[in-house]
Length: 193
Image 1 (cartoon, rainbow, N blue to C red):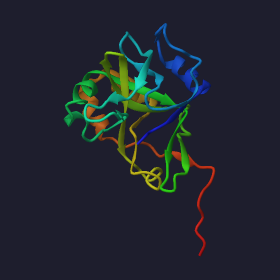
Image 2 (tube, rainbow, N blue to C red; image 1 turned 60 degrees about the horizontal axis):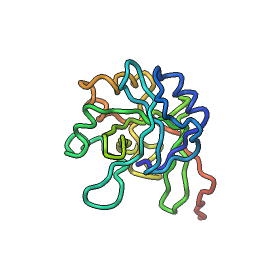
Image 3 (cartoon, rainbow, N blue to C red; image 1 turned 135 degrees about the vertical axis):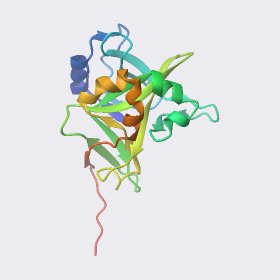
């Protein structure tokens, strides 16, 4: 799962490196923790080449007042509210790191040391108040499972173009796992024997 992530100067520089079109409305001064329901800059393929656009995080739920912020990669194509967006409106959510909370409610930070950014797979849809995105999640690997059973579906940089443009590869991406991440937390409960 992913319920908060960090977007900083390094992430902005990396995004500017890979995009060829930037929406004039983007607020590049928006830095720090990104929470559900907030505007965030994501990468799409609406123009020739990658585009940077601002969207709000989370789809409105038709059954409750809560936002849908994540979607399971294993079942996203089966869900009526997600399938069309996953097939036609994919995006990349870039972060320096993301957070998850362990069972004792301690905040844990996850980074990917092999990359300047974490490239999270997502998709978006248009609503009355503008475009909104969701982050895809997959089963947690060994780096994440001590903290949570889900993690973002993370792409390598050489997969970004195929994720955005190759509709025929979507099912393969949704079945792949995420790379091993590094985790850090300020306080860790120690067990005494």
